[in-house]
Length: 308
Image (cartoon, one colour):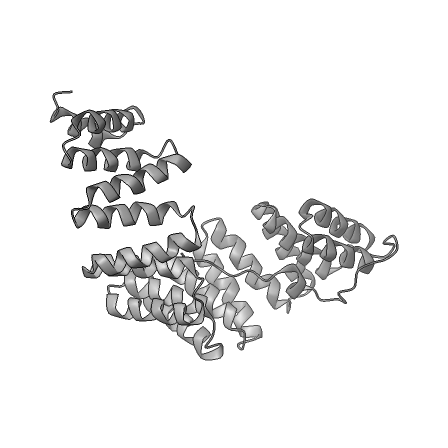
């Protein structure tokens, strides 16, 4: 789970963080009010407040920066990128704006741009561990696993308790073929945060790749205790169970997926195969036909074995 960490509204503020008791009158008061609204989850209201600050003071870099963050939180990523760019134009040393613009670019698929922006943030302050973690994630998306691992390692050196950096370094190691190193890193992440469902899931995946199916199932179990809606964990646990011959267990997991996502093609296909293994031809045909109706070509091939 590659997650680029964002700077929160509270952490990003360049001004005093006090709730405004009276109606906001100045740009700074509108910024403070926007920050408080953002903290309360009122994203659109926060955007409106930052916009009023900009109307009062069009040269206020902090207003653009915070509006960009609020827009990003509200899913308006392209507009957020434009606000970060304007903030940087007004204050070229606003390192948080470079980091967050990098995040926005990564969200839009521009990972090279993300690396460039986060590198500028690092040049302004090389002591912030989250910046290295974020750049590592963008580098990993580009297939630069060596560079990503170096960034995650620097993040860990600066903050040894940052569980996300261990998890992300584990992913980069796994993608580069170092399964033992990946499992070790996921374990280190879990030593720091037992409630990290993605790290349990990722270690399960690495264990599957290394042939430890029983260990993988144990990890998926932990991930699903923490996150009962973790569809990918149900899917991968089902595949591990099927590989061990536990077809009923695989069927149960696929059925759980379909309760949440009734149009999940892969779940119908895999459940159909598991039912076939248990001799439930009728159930297998029903599942494979459903998958085929959703456009799955593999199910069409499998149905031919039943003369369908």
